[in-house]
Length: 456
Image 1 (cartoon, helix red, strand yellow):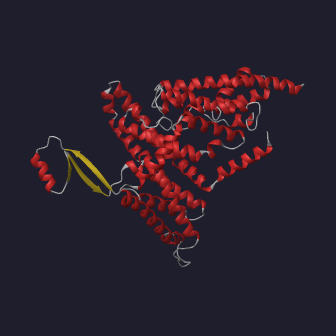
Image 2 (cartoon, rainbow, N blue to C red):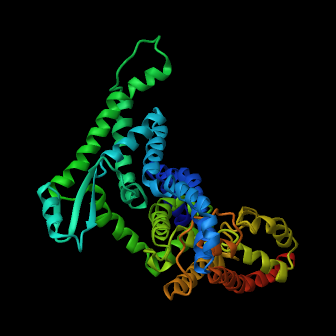
């Protein structure tokens, strides 16, 4: 290895992984996981209690399960449907905590700032085709807007899930960062209301946040107001159209998926947690795609309508079986072909955890970091698995991933559940393990010969 290159790479990767704003984004997405997981469980349960029985004609069963289906809908609405609102609070909280100021106030300021940029009026369209002309004339006389046979009415003070859900994540990120920067900067410069020393700490903290919080919210509201005046569009629509959609469309290409998977492995090879280093990209782009797929399925119950081909869960479903590097296949190859006692011992200890995608024992037990014997399969196996699953999804053989599943779900079962109980998706995941095994096996066999040479 060229030490100069390795040291330079480690330095850059280390700075990237510890960059303050990227860490805030990563931790904010992680903070949402309990809620998004609860919402995904609700969606998955409704697949079992509503969608599959409906397709099979079991209308009686669906009717009996209506209370549970409704409760699952409430859980979904309180979690995934408002992910942008949740995320905005998490961004403010983590930003303030990083800057060592009141984190609760920071989260609330970020939340309020994001809400201040959202459209406050919802237009409701009603089809009046076939309605008597005299009625239409009377409605027009009341000042209601008629567009042909469509009645348009507006309701003020309503928040829609279009902006509060996955589509609003980028806006929540940008406004949350902006408002948090203003809030923490003013707090650290002591632009606050000073209270007497005998005032309780909770009251003192609340008063201290008044000026920074007010300035941050007003500044955010101004940013939300200007696009409406200048471009006749809400800020969220502009960000979605010119930032979020282009980035997400770029992420859907075959090369983007394969290359990102390769980078995860490359960082791991140099001893850096690839998923943590690249979390701002993987979670910032692919997590909204997953949540939007979930929302679309919940609205349409039709997997053919899912807007995004590749989501955050797709990596785990098809290219991380057993953990990074598809090490469940390596464990199998070691059991079958390895003659090295230390490898077999590590594999025996790692197998129970590998089934649940915990691969630190084998990653650091072999080890994989800077290991020249296994560098090739370590780097190429996940990208190849991604390419296979991507081709299968593109061909319509399997649906896109649209259900968030906990990462410790065993291989095969993960893909099955993440695609709404699609059996073929589970089989593709198992097939990828077989492909990974074929790639790992020759290198495990070659490692036997290296051991013999070392003994001599």
